[in-house]
Length: 134
Image 1 (cartoon, rainbow, N blue to C red):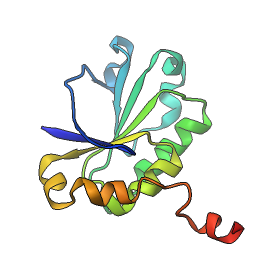
Image 2 (image 1 turned 45 degrees about the vertical axis):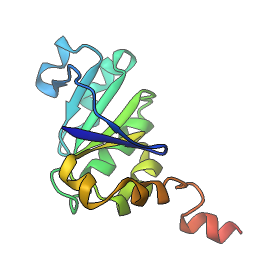
Image 3 (image 1 turned 120 degrees about the vertical axis):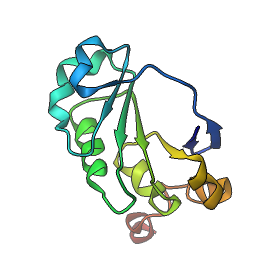
C-alpha cells in the first residue's frame, strides 16, 4: 500500500487506473510520467487528464520537480501527484512547484510520520521570499 500526503495529512491511497505515458491514448483520466519524460508530450491530453502522477526514483533526484513546474506552466490544472520516496523536508518544495499531493510508500510513512508532514503544510509562509517580504 501507499499513503497520500496532503496539507491535511495522511490518507490511504485508493486503487486507480493509471496508464504509463506510452499508453496515454487509452487513458482514463490518469497518466504516470517518469522524472525524465517531457511534459510537452501530454499537452494534447491536458484537458482530459484529472491526475498526472510523476515518479521520483529517489529522494535525491529532483528532476520531477521540474516536470511538475513545466506542466503547470503549460496550463495543466488537474491534480499533480509526486510518487515515490519523497521526504517530508521536500514537501514544501513539492507544493511550491505545483504538486497537490505526494504518494509515499508505507515504510516511509512509518519513518516520517504524519506530524512531520503536517508541520510543513503551511508551505506558503515558510519560504525565504515570505521572510524577505516581512
